[in-house]
Image 1 (cartoon, rainbow, N blue to C red):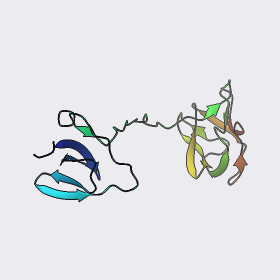
Image 2: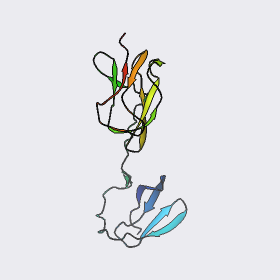
Image 3: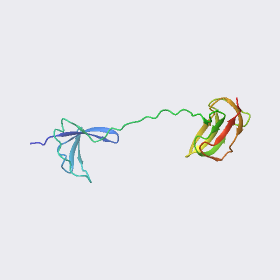
Image 4: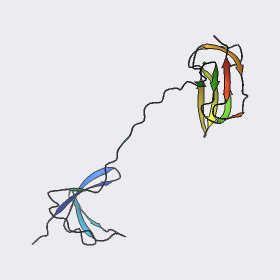
Length: 155
């Protein structure tokens, strides 16, 4: 008399296979995938407990992976004070680019300077339309969170 056959769904290298085995408690386990027969040895694991009615309930050895998608990042505008006349550093880092000077007219979203933080360049953009009154930083300068970078003329 042949022992009952069990069907198990397994994933190998991202590919799913339906595996037919006769006795999960033997070593090696004789597994049939399609028409191919394999001897499978499990190391450092206790013998499997017998599974009742496994043919009716295929067992998956791979847990589903939940994928969380991040929202798409849009260019962030610089933080400014309550009056909107100063642009401050949104995080600590080093200034690796300054693209405006006093007297320059800027439009909303225009890049004012570039701040490197944690090996990433962050574009600091104008939060409003205006004219640059002063630039408070120099190229290569280390800045702290909230430090004033650029001031706009009032208006």
